[in-house]
Image (cartoon, rainbow, N blue to C red):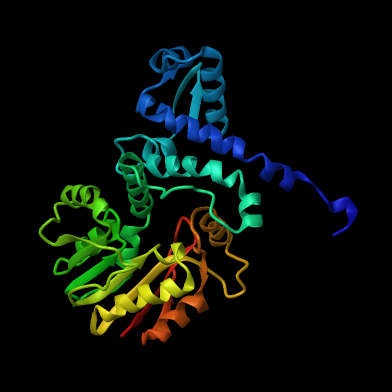
Length: 331
C-alpha cells in the first residue's frame, strides 16, 4: 500500500466507536425505547417522563436518531422497527439485559492494558454473586440465547433421543428449544443452585416444567449422577483452563450412554488463533474476568473430545450473531 493510499479513518472510527456504545447503553439504562413504545413523542414529552434535563435529552435523542435507533419527523421521535423488536422491554426478543451486561463490563475493559501486563483478572468478585446481578446475568444469557436457540434446535438432529443434559444451562434456553423441537425429549438443566429460581421461572413460562427439571450442582467439581443420551455444553468451556475443560468434558462423557451425543457450543477460534474477530476479542474478555479462561480453537476442542473417547467429530456451523459454532461427536 502506498503512502497516498493510507487513510487513518478506520483507526479513528474504531477509536471513537465507544461513543455510540455509551449512547446505546444510556438509552437502555434510561429505558427510552420502552417509554416510546409504539408512540411518537417530542423531546419535551420524553424529558418530562424521564424527569431529565432538556439539553442532554435532546442531544441523546438526536444521537439515537443518527444511529438509526430512533426516527425523527416534525420534531417528534419514534422507535425504528429494529428498536421496537429488540429494545422494548415487553418484546419477546428484548436485548436490554445483555446490553446492560455489556455496560457492566466497560469498567474492566477500560483497564485492559493492566490485565495484559499483570496476567490477572480485574473483576474483583464473582460477576453474578449478588442476587440482582445474578438475575441480570442470567436474563442477559437468556436474551442472547433466544436469538440463536430456535435455529440451533432445528439444525441439530436429536430425534430418538430421550434425555438431554444441559450442563451450565443457566436459564435453560437451549433445553427449552430442544424440547419444543422434539416432543418426546426430556432435559435436565445442571447448574449452580442459585440459578434455580430464574431457570424454573423461564421453564414455566414455556409450559415445560413436566419435561425439564433443574438439578443444582457444580460441573467444574462434581460428577453427574444419572445417564443421558445427549449432552449440551454451551458457552462454558471458555471460562475454564484447558485442564478444567478436559475434566468437564470427561464428566459429560461419563454421564452419556453408549452412542450418546455430545455437543460443544462456543466462540471457536480458527486453528491459527487469529480469528474470527469476536472469539479473538472474547478471549480478552476472559482475561479480564477469569483466572484461566480463553477462547479455544476448533482443533483444541476436538483434541479434548478425542482424549475423552469421543468419535465421529464434526463441526456444525449456523448463522450466529457472534461467530459461535458447534462441535459434535458420539461416545
